[in-house]
Length: 387
View 1 (cartoon, helix red, strand yellow):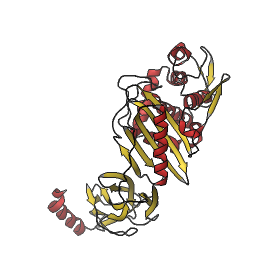
View 2 (cartoon, one colour):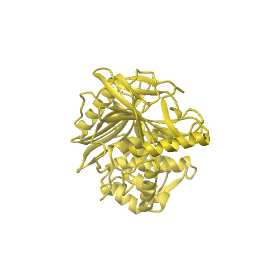
View 3 (cartoon, rainbow, N blue to C red):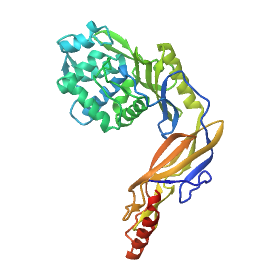
View 4 (cartoon, one colour):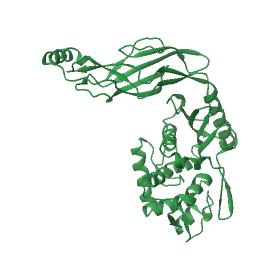
């Protein structure tokens, strides 16, 4: 794998990568949450991280994965809002009124439209609603959990494991703050027509008014999601999102001691994320970021560029050195087609990887002559072992 870097001025580009001066250093910011992960959606900049890969029980945050399975089925045409699911005795006892947990008070033996169940799960965190959906879609909650874990892997959640549709305590059920933010971003990006449910303040079902448990929605800070959770083992947790002045931020916090502390910390982190950074464009759309070495090509290298402009968020104060590198597996074997994925532009603040942008071939490179290929072979034999 090649790691290429050399110093340049902001907005310039050299063949072997870059380092950016007068950029960001980590600010002296912290949160009382034990685990935290905060990302700017537009640039992909990691704004804050704290023990973000530690596994912890998700509690009701698991319902985000339940909704992903449902939204995916609706988007693919397998389900519709008007489909009705029956309330089984298992759903009623495990997640309904007798369970003394979060419930939408679904009546035993009744049938409920999927749209109402979705609102019950998102707004009221209804455990009965989750189980009704799970049994209706997969025949059993166990079968639905298999779908949850399959979809988790498909969308890139490699460590999170789900054991039920509700998030109720279960052995071996864990998530990470990093993957919860990844899931939240996925829900917003892939299902904009359904994401609106997460900002719904209240829901009336069976003549019972139920209010959204997300404290951020009532703060007038641009919040529009997503979920809260609590377990005795890991404390109070929240996954939040907010949009303000054209910027969207996702966060996951866990390990707080009370619902009040959860609300205060989530607001503090969101406010800091929105106010303490400004956007700096590094490369314009279509601009060559750097080059990757080719093997057996008519040219010795191929230009690289991102799919659009490359920007990064930098702190408004305490500026220091930001390092970025082009990373790719190489040399790249010719022929190379324009637009082919080649590598990534990785940006570090200190020792923290804050951003990763895919890079693509900016041009096509054909196969070289026999003489050119022979020279490349000799060079690779001589120095390839150094990598």
